[in-house]
Length: 131
Length: 151
Image (cartoon, rainbow over all chains, first blue to last red; front, side, top):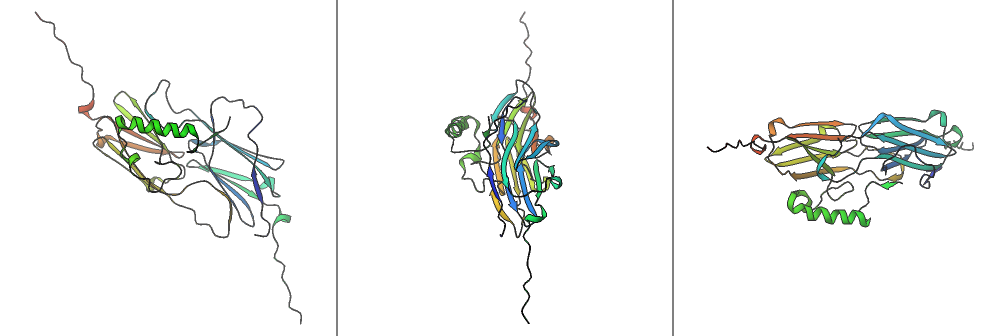
């Protein structure tokens, strides 16, 4: 691809969170088309209104809040995973059209569309054959 | 702190697996001993949280992006079987920068400590979280024995 965007993972968050509890790293797919980048994250248990997406200075931050699902003092027979919010941060070195970023969250899968700004899209230049 | 969701290389995860194996003799998860066919990330997918409330056992599993029609849940005696698949989105002309989300089929069998009334089992899938409600069979419910006082 002509304009390969580079996506690097940022350092773990330095700012302190206001919410307590555990934070988990969501598994993601990041794919690129000529039109933009798409980030798909597995965030089971996150409702669509509990997602927080932030894009600032080329850093994309996604957060999904998970509400507690168990009663207190629950008697676990098997406890193979813990509950906590999902968090992930990426540095994106591609010109993203911030105003057109949009996202949706269904069935525990968050999809964030990051369209490229017009100038960053590869343009096909037609070569005219000389007569 | 940011925790890795699944990292089987972490010593803690290995220890947890070892502990699971130790506990498995009591709980007998049949699928754990069978080789994983198509695990997403973990050796036995899906990971389960199972708990008990009075006469009901609840089993919960996280399966984001799985459609309810692609899930097959069955209960025979005390064995709960969860089968399903998550299809890969066929996308052409895309370059992957990261591909961490697994796809494919999964199958897990869990032996519960008591017999289940299979006719009353209910399952729901909300925001990628599967919850199976497993009412205990009548024979498995505790019975109060009246103690009569002798003459």
